[in-house]
Image (cartoon, rainbow over all chains, first blue to last red; front, side, top):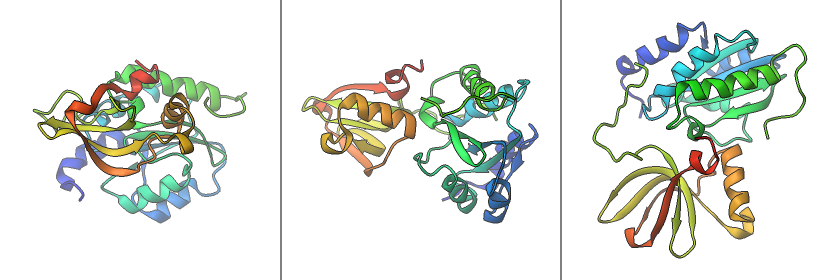
Length: 148
Length: 95
């Protein structure tokens, strides 16, 4: 059951304030991720304080890096369930978790940060993982392959 | 709102993805929920199955990379059976 939207609104705004486009419907997800070229970071936002409280500041820190995905979008797990489910179909070989990050290149997932990779770690550590992925997959001379 | 925790008063591992090993050599991965006289309660649990998962290290490596393939929405493990509980992030060398 979704949380009261009044509780969630600040968490949405925190991410939107970073310049991240929020996707709340299936058509919005398909428009953003379908037939996508280049690099797209999908942040699966979450209410859970155990990890999401670190994930959002990590995203904010990572988005200050000079090399970035061409597009960054977000869906809200547990709140916008249909949009989140649709977004996960674009990286369906990975099991769902929230919060999480998926980095897509030309529509294919190349890097994933699961919830367990966020829990108990500092925002700086998670941001460092994201930045390393941005450098690897989003630069002008990107490397082939996916994360080990 | 960053850092806001919705679950005050819970066990320090509440909400953390853990690897639980039992004295009869089962391995379970899932979110730690609580512990009481009934045992350790986990949510979103994947259980190691040698036929499906290969070796325990392979199971944990695959789980770390691809996430938790949930077998059971929840499980309660008798306290007497619990041999160890470790955050998956520690097992994966993330911390």
